[in-house]
Length: 234
Ligand code: 1GP
Image 1: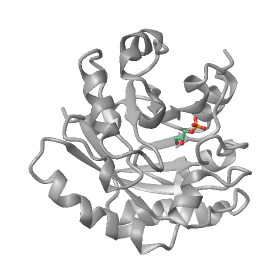
Image 2: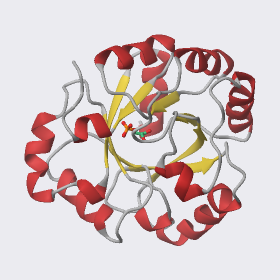
Image 3: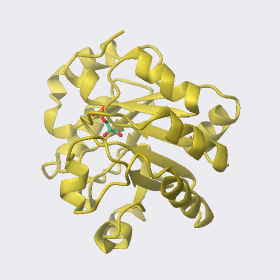
Image 4: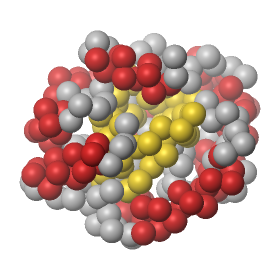
């Protein structure tokens, strides 16, 4: 079974998934064992990536993690330089909420040489940036505007356009450190409209927010900052 099939099956069976996101710039490999030991037991995936990452860092972090955990390590790259053949899979992201060709197709084309001779599993992912109440680094780095939380129709239509164009997963992103995570209403409406799994991330800092996202229909939730700085509220 591929990593995508695992996610599809879990989504189909309503087994909720949790990814812990690592920003390679803020990760210390010498602490990798400790980090793995501290992962919440519900963790199903490790995502590695960030809007900007120093060259070569992602590879080092992936290798350090690979030796210490059996959890799938999935790349969540901000650009093509963050692709490491040592990971298990790659969220092949298109920023479909934005209108910047750089993140709709340019970075994707530039990544091909790196990807094509590896065993990385490629997961076509429609990435939708939603207003999280403050300017986040995705917004800055991608030079695109997030979709407003109250424009649910536009968000649903964007997600459906992603599904119709062959994306296998839709990722609803409020941005790292968002003040407001993606609302339950948005998650619910997108879930009702789509046939493919939904990832939700950005600004989730408590068990309560995590549960809310799951109940609304998120199949996989991503938590970065709150685990990174130990501020997650049980
Ligand atoms: C992944 O960028 C998010 O979608 C993670 O956001 O750092 O706010 O958890 P946080």
